[in-house]
Length: 42
Image 1: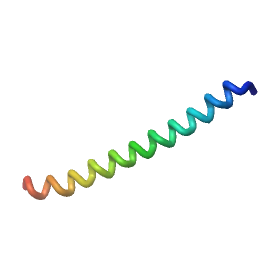
Image 2: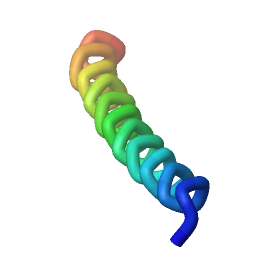
Image 3: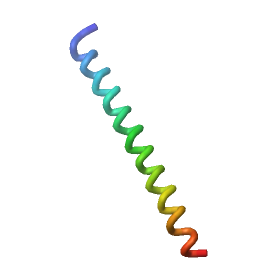
Image 4: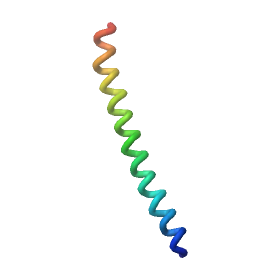
């Protein structure tokens, strides 16, 4: 395996982890907004 391939794999991995974290954060924020906003609207 060449160095470029290794670096690319490492980059993909770290980007994947970052995206997962971001998705979890967005889900948490959305859930929190639903919990806070919906009762006040109803």
